[in-house]
Amino acid sequence: MRLNPLFLARMLILLEIIALAVSTAATVVVEILIFITVLGFKDLRMRLLTSLRQPMVIMSMVLLAMVGLGIFYSIAPFSEGMDMWASWRKYLMVPFVVALYDDPKWKERFALVFIGLMSLAAFISLAGVLFDFTIYYRFPVGIVVDNHATQGMFFSAAVFACLILLRFPPKEFKTPSWTLITAIILITLSIFLATPGRSGYLAFMVYITVFLFWSVRGIKRVLLMTLAPVVIIMMLIASPVARDRIKLGFSEMQTYKQDKTVTSMGLRVIWWKNTLAILKKAEQPVFGYGTSGFEHAYAAHVKGQTGWQGKPTTDPHNQFLKIWVEHGIVGLAIFLGFIGSFFRQTPDKTFYYLGIGTLLAWCATSMCSGHFTTFHDGRFLLVWCGIMLASPLQKSPVST
Image (cartoon, rainbow, N blue to C red; front, side, top):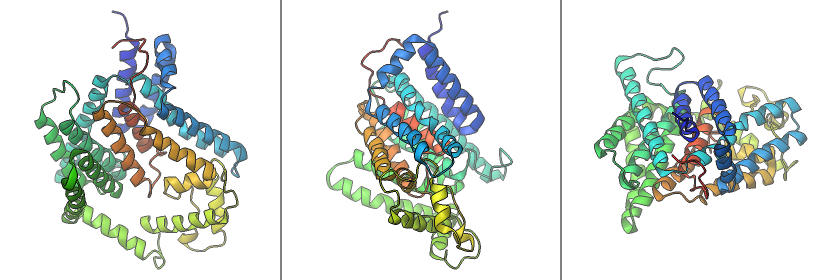
């Protein structure tokens, strides 16, 4: 039997999303296999070259080049800049997944595999809370996907995927509605009862709002989009896990000046204020302090301050502020151009909604974190959006 390289490469992409949920090391191994497979077959290389014409791919490469150039003028040591640039290699996945997943049926399969995986994870999560067990000694009870923030965001993405497939099913969609509805119920229960991730709650709210925006028109849209956040907030308040987590966050933000110990949200407030002060100095307004330069610019700014409020950091936990500090106005414009390029992709409507919804959710959560560049969240965004938003290739050298 003749090996179909396109089928093999697509299956490896599917395997990566599974590996991403369970193992960092396995994810890296699968990525290497993807690169070797695509580069090792002429027909797949042709697909890769064709994908380079798409806006999302072009801007991902521009962004990666920007980070690479930032090494050479950074205030950080060259080795630190190289390490940071290496962590951005995940952006190389964009042209690869775009080249492989232009077929709507494979987009659908990928979405269904992800939904199935998250449904299983949600079941285990709820069982863990109910019977008080963990699947891995480093994970708290109820957490089965890396950490509570990542789990909440992945679960929210899966619920959104179910809703979009139900409301805007692709052509010849054969998955029974009851399976998607069951997945929605199961995963939503795990989000609210077992997953104490504020990022997940915010992502869930964004996803539901975006879904309603696309699903209804006229006065119904206004009413439902106004009502939905209220209902979600009430659900969060009704959940002991979610209520306590959100209450703690607000408390930490209000009392950070008086707190004698480090707090998660208190640190964020300090980081944001100091980062804005660094930007206000505008010592490097155009091109910034260079790749990995944030840590050194921040350390210089807080030098001499006492207490945990003067503790240095490598990340302000705001993706946009970090890009701005390290790469200046030019870098921030390129990053926003990268985000804007997602909207210029031309897949079928169902998959356009799936990709753009996740982009908007990640933009919202990245106001308080760095989800475009973290290992799990960043990879998921790039792979998911790369697949869902991939426009049809002008030429398809290999058939399915």
